[in-house]
Structure formats: structure tokens, C-alpha cells
Image (cartoon, rainbow, N blue to C red; front, top):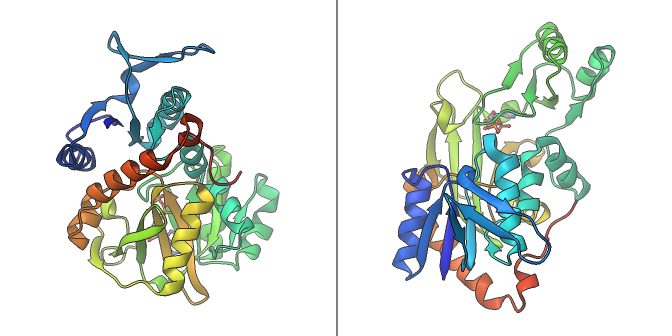
Length: 306
Ligand code: ADP
């Protein structure tokens, strides 16, 4: 196959591993800086151009689109889909997953376990919002945040009230969430490929830190999932319509709750922790999907809900 990888930097661990895995399986692969792709949107002959070159002949595209370039990146991916190039994750599903609130609403509709979450606009509703998620301590999240930045633990009612007021005053969109104390500063990353969790790890925040993000200095170890955790992760991926994703769970005393579904999960932490060749599994998945797609349309059919 001829595979395009949309990534800002070919040297990133995940990108480099995908290139390596694709080449090892005999594919031709090319890394394209998504911000250098430009397009001609015509009805009969949509095209993508790259530094003056007309891009043609790709069978599949692997999007590794960072949160800061979601809008442009998904537009480029959509253009590949219009050209009947099979996406590993499709543009609609990536857009869905990048909206934390929309994701939670979609998962809630299908009965997936979630932390109790509230969303409001007017400062007059703050008292009630705090009460609805069970009072302090609670977690306040900026909808635009990633890698744990913009996630705040408010330990007291007064702190919660003033932080929410401050964010609202800045016109920032935030959601307010029940604090899952019993998770003890750890979460579980389930790496889903197709309809399987291919690896899982427990991430633990550094001492005194409730956020377990590896970018925030957390550490990772291998973990055995319960059947309920496994099925929650697989269902969450399916509802979002993502073929490959990282589903982040917290172990709460009311069962596993999903915090986030990440459509461009990093490979380094999970490969190092699990010792598995996840990049190879991703390439195998796209090969299989390519072989079993009967029509060009089938390759880019919209999956998932909402
Ligand atoms: P980001 O997308 O910025 O990584 P997350 O929503 O994943 O933000 O939150 C970052 C970290 O904060 C999580 O990995 C988890 O360890 C912790 N965390 C988030 N929400 C909660 C919560 N409701 N209760 C307990 N810990 C939480």
C-alpha cells in the first residue's frame, strides 16, 4: 500500500515508529506536514497539493493531528476521504473526540460510566452547578486544555466558586466534574485498535499531584484490566467511531469511568510499558480494513454516533 502519515514532525517517536512499522510490512510511506497540505475543493476532481506537488495514488492515510491544528488538520483529512483514501481514523470521529463536552454527552447517551459532570454559562448558576456534582472537592476543566493543562482541583467550596467565576469572567468554556478521589492520582490508558484493547497501562501522578499525565511528570506501569474496564474502553471507542484511540479511565468506587478518548494516542509510553509493537498492530489493522473494504465509499463511511 501507499500510506500517508499526517504529522507535523517526522522525528516524533510515534510518527517514526509508524514509518518503521509500515516499511517493515512492505509499504511505501510518506510523512506529510499537515499544515503544508493545501487543497482544491471541486466536485469531480478533489485534489491535495504539497509544496507545489499534486498528491495522488495514496491508499491510506494515518492522521496524527495535534490538538492545536484540529481545524485545519481535519479539513485536510476530509479532503483525503473525498479522494477515497482510507483513513485510520476518520475526520468526523476526530472532530467529535476533540470536543470534550460533546464526547461526554455521546458516551452518556449510550450509558458509559462517567464522572458526574456539569456545564454552565452564567455565574448565577455556579452554586447549583457545584451542588450538582456533589460539592467540593471537585475538578474544573478547560474544554480546550490538553496534557493536563487547564485541569484544576478545587479542594474547598470557596476555591471552586472563585476559580469557576474567574474562568467564566475570561469567557473560557469549562466543565465541572466530580473528583474521583479513590483513583489516588492514577488513571488507566487503554490503547484500542479495532475492537480490541491491545495494551493498557496505569499512569500515576508524581507525589502530591492528582493529574497522572506523563507530560506532567507521571510514571507508567503495566496493569491487568477487569473485563468491565476492557468492555468499557471498547464500547467508548466504538461510540466515538474511532478505530485507534486511547481511552482514559479512572477506577471509581462506582466502577470504571471514562475521562477522555484520545484520537492520536502517543506510542512511546504504551510501547515502552507493554513491550508490544503497537505501531505494527495499527498498520496491520489498516491493511485488513483496506482489504475488506469492498467499495471506495465503504472505505470512508462515517462510523460512530452524533
Ligand atoms: P487532559 O485532556 O488535559 O489530559 P484530563 O481530563 O485527562 O485532561 O485530566 C488530566 C488528569 O487529571 C487525568 O489523567 C487524571 O489523572 C486527573 N483527573 C481528571 N479528571 C479527574 C476527576 N474527575 N477525578 C480525579 N482525577 C481526575
